Image (tube, rainbow, N blue to C red):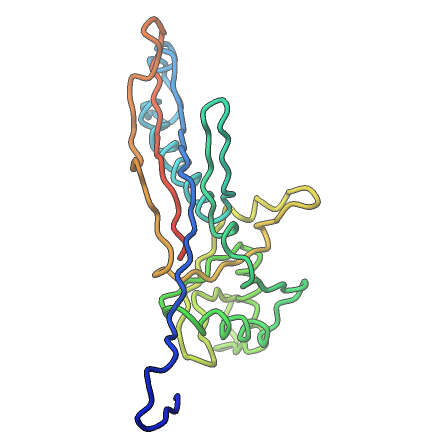
Length: 238
């Protein structure tokens, strides 16, 4: 700790310098609809066409929002709108990045966790692509013990990482869809090989309009039904 002289005056004031940042809101809309003929036709599976599509589009709508929270880029265009996009984790994480350089050894993983857990809360989660999840689960390969000669099940899936430095248990959440995002051209980021350690106490969804399903979006003279899911939101990264 600091040392001060007897009878001394007030020491130099040291404070946490607050910084101001900003993000834009983003409007996400997922529309769907069918003609009256399509709705009255018999479809395989026996489900109501509109109800089936509502469930499917609700999932796609949530996926679009989640993709923004991870990979969104902050932007604003005044013309033709205006139109803005919200920045996500990829936008705001600037220095705390680790390049696995093609191989992510156990020691490198522990160094990564030590760095990630040094600051902030211990309420952190590791979100990763299937490829990264596969690499992490392979850590158990050289520590495998067969129960008996009749064992036919092989393999393991790691659901959490434990920091050797802090003893903190960091859950591992594999994002399956990221596995199909790895076809980007040269120069673009490739989520198929990415993972994020996220401090859940430092991020938040900031909605101006929570997700809502809007019906009867078709034109007055349209022979069909159109609906959409709509949300306007932003992302807070402290």
